[in-house]
Structure formats: C-alpha cells, structure tokens
Length: 358
Image 1 (cartoon, rainbow, N blue to C red):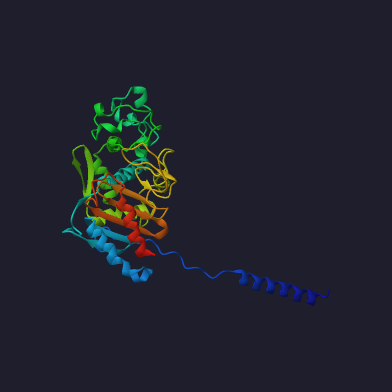
Image 2: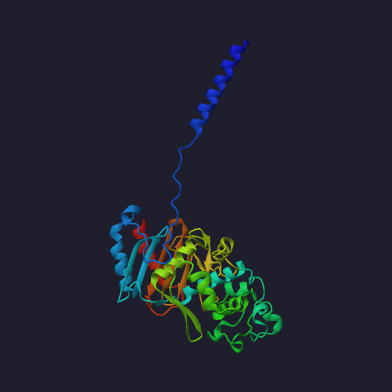
C-alpha cells in the first residue's frame, strides 16, 4: 500500500469512529433539582405551585375538607423542600406550638446518632456503661444485655405493661434484650445517656446540635412520665426535611448518613416495620403498640412503599417519601378515638393525598 493511501485509510477510520461515538452518545440529561432548604433565621420559605407539579388541583379542597373534619390543626406538604401546601385549621396558626407526642421519638434517634458521631457514645454499648448499673430492676446479668441500640429498636426486653414510669423499680425484666419487640417508654433513657456522655443537659445538647442548626423552634416539656417536644408546624417540617435529605442541611451533614440509613431500615427481625424509633412502610408484616401479634401486609397500604414516618399519639405525623420527593406533616387532635401511633386515619388520609399527587 502506498503511503498516501495508508494515511487516507487511517483518517477514514478515525472519522468513522468519531461519527459512531457521537451517534452512540445520549443527550445530556438535566441535573436533578437540588433540595431546597429554608434560611435559618427567617420566616421565608420558597413555594412550588401545584400546577407546576402537574398534580390534580381539583383534589386539594377535598383533602383540606377531610383534614378539617378529622380535627386537624395544621398540614404542610413539601416537595423537594419547597412548600406546596400549608394550611391551618381550628384557631391554629403558623406561630402556635403543638406537641409532637411520639413522633418526637425520632428526635431522640437523631441526637443519639449525633452523639455517636461525636464519639460520646456507641449505640452497641450497654446502657449501664453510661448510666451505671441498677438503672433497672432486672438482674444484673440481664440488665447488662441491654444496649443503646435495643432502646432505639424497642427490644429492651423490659416489661412494657407497667406504664410510662422509667424509674428503676418500674423497669422490670420480661425477656432477654433483643428477643422481644414492645413499644415502651424506656427509650427515653437514651436522653439520659446522651446527657451523661456529653456532660451537659439533654436540652442544651439538643438545642446546640440539632434544633438551632436547622432553624427549628420549640422546647421539650415533661408531661407526667413523658418527655414531649412542642413546636410550630414549620419546625416539624424542618426536621422532616432534614430526614428527607438523609441528615444533611444545605452543605452540612448534621446526622451521619450511614447511621440515618440504619435508623430508617428494619432494626430487628421481629417487627419488620420498625427502625430506630421510625415506622417503616412497605414491609411484609408489622407489629403495633401494646400487642405481640404480627399483622401481615404493609403498615399503611395506601402510602408509598418507601415511606418512613414519625407517628405520634392523636395523629401527629411526619411522612417522608423519597421516591415522591415529599415531606408531609399533620398536627392536631385525634381523628377518631385516642390512639398511640398508627390509626385508620393514616390509610384514609393517603387516599386523599394520592388523589392530589397522581
């Protein structure tokens, strides 16, 4: 082959390769929209119109009517961090404080994770490493089986039938830690663990390391033997947004992402629908408070299967749905009779929400 013919052949092959590469390439896809975070020291919060999301706007009013009928005080929908709908009912407004009830358990989950990231605690360690022995009435060898993770997963093995008092005399052995799931107020001892390990008060550690960093308001209040958080609805939504963003707020990782993944996945093999004080949808079975019965099917059948939720007495709700980019908050009185966490209201509410967003 003559040299000039060889050069022409090489150039032709290079041209064909170039054309083939261009043909095989896919158009540049737009980058996913960044999560929006409202400013810390401001009431400003950006919004997204329902029309921009192509939701079924005609279903909004039926949803709001249902919420009002069921004794709601407030309701917020966030999409990727921005407010789509914010509504107040029954003399409640955006400055009114309301209790989270057991939905606030997830705040304790967050603080335990932060304390672990600060190397103050290790959730695999036994509780008595921080509180000393004798914090229960269980035999010492049984008490020493109970780790911080058992408190997070509701598997302490302590007797849940004795009420909410967490004094040593009321924390009695029923089963070995890890062998029995039971919804129990003993989880609150994690707040003592964090306080002891950080050499400050629970309130100070919480405010400094979580509340103030994401612009929440509110305070912990003692109601009988319960430690309950109370805040505005937007503050509850801020925590929901932090959770949706896997523990991140703007460019700061407030809560370790790996720990948060543990918290929002099945934490033990008894109640598949329970993480670290978070309720999980989409599992094949679930247990309920004050019951040892295993129910087949999803926790909330009408809700998306990837949803995780903070659920509190009298229907205090934070729903987080990563696949739909949603955080939904409901505060108020019980929709029906008093309840502990989950109620029929969840499933009925999701019928109305689905009608709006699909």
